[in-house]
Image 1: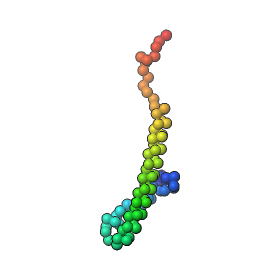
Image 2: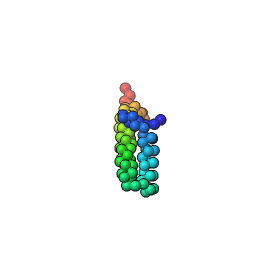
Image 3: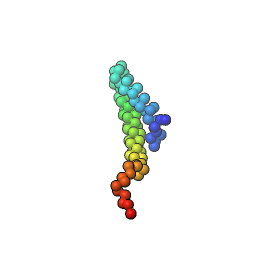
Image 4: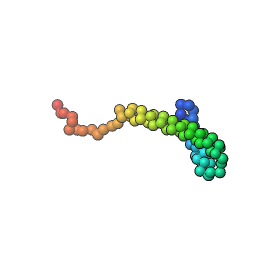
Length: 83
């Protein structure tokens, strides 16, 4: 399933577009004006990807904190007093 940010950015699509931009820039067969335009678009795509990744990281941190309450621990028979 594709990850989406609150803005509805499709992570996989933005990453693929960023990779395409990098490839075109690395080939070096475009004029400076076009390179600048692609660079600007690349920066936008990179920001979108980072936003999705950061949102995912925050969600994982929240889920981990919630899951800590459900972590089981081995039963220590010595801790139980017999009456």
